[in-house]
Amino acid sequence: MKIAVIGAGTVGKASGIGLESKGHNVTFADNNSARLDELESSGHKVDSSVPDVTKFSDIVMVSVQTPTVSGHTDLQALLCVCREIGLGLADSPGYKLVVVRSTVPPRTTRTQVIPVLEAVSLKRAGRDFGVCFNPEFLREDSALEDFLFPERIVVGQLDQHSGTMLESLYDSFQKPVVRCTLEEAELAKYVANAFLATKISYFNEVHELCQALGVSSEIVSSIAALDGRIGRYGTTGGRPFKGKCLPKDVEAFLTFARDLDLRLDVLRAAVLVNHKQPLRQYA
Image (cartoon, rainbow, N blue to C red; front, top):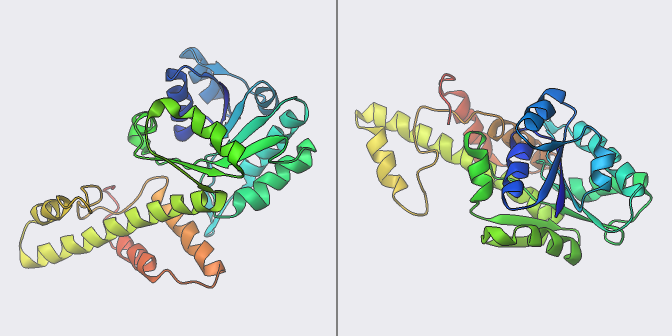
């Protein structure tokens, strides 16, 4: 397939290079010229025009940043890119699939992304073009490996045709594919990251308890991690959850719940524990 990857950061770059390795024709687009120059010098196809790459692609994958600002997810970059994609959809024949990979709160794809695409393209989602939400579960230090060898592939679909087209893109991965609604896929990403954050905070409290008792938290946590239901990730005490994803996603998830008049008390407690950890180390 001809794939346009919009946003060549950690997620977009890993996704595009991974799909290239599977034999697909990938073109990267980004407003950061340095990123495009780096990719082009490495032999990858690049283009600075989102409408153009949309017009000549079968699938458009969007992986732009959605930072958390004052507790809310900033969708400005995503919606701006969607307007440009809409211009490309308007100027091209045939059915295309738009795939959102940026992390967004539930209902964003249906209530904000799709209306922008339809308004600019003057076309109808589900009839003239498809839409999916395809969350990524990539670690920054091993993004390409994580993309190529996922534990699961989640296809949030607007309709059956959209989902089938995206699932076919992943046929060669031979990994479990979960097809669900747009909202279920959007929520699943936040739930996964929030659980990982909570797990890290729990084992930080275990670490404090072990220190008070004068026993090895590494041994205690390692024993617990041997339980297949728990696993090793996040069980090393004395390290807060940091990085680009977990803090911002947890903050946005708590705000999303609060806006629904819901309190996620366990997750709120995880954040309080996280604030007590030394900042020099990372989980």
